[in-house]
Image 1 (tube, rainbow, N blue to C red):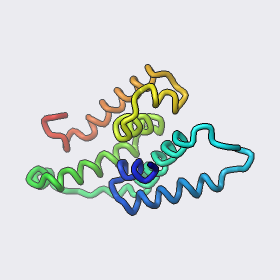
Image 2: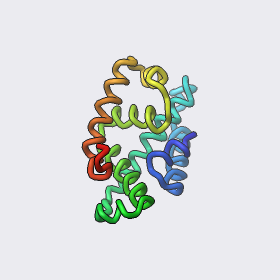
Image 3: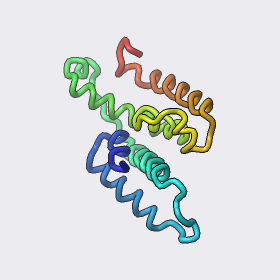
Image 4: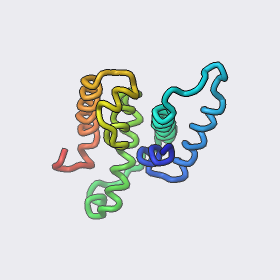
Length: 147
């Protein structure tokens, strides 16, 4: 689950494996006084999202590819779109990126996310909506007429 979550954000198996290691090393280094995790799945999923976003933020090297080239090569377009989405997610506020990743990359519903994050379903829906709008603006050049 940790690998899959990281891979969906980063799109690179080697980096996703690094995230997997990072998450479990952090878990091992937790203070003994922190006790047992109340919801291990929630913790691991959130930790994977945050660690994956850290990798994307650290990488911040933008590849410049001509848009006409992308449109003539659908596979290249998808790769560049995935990289642009990862960079855009890394620039979001942590809560917004987390909600977006849980909702649209992990496929959780608003109720599950609300319970996991300790916020209301309405707030989850608002954050998801605003984040989608913001990402749609930033990814407009990659989406063409669909933006």
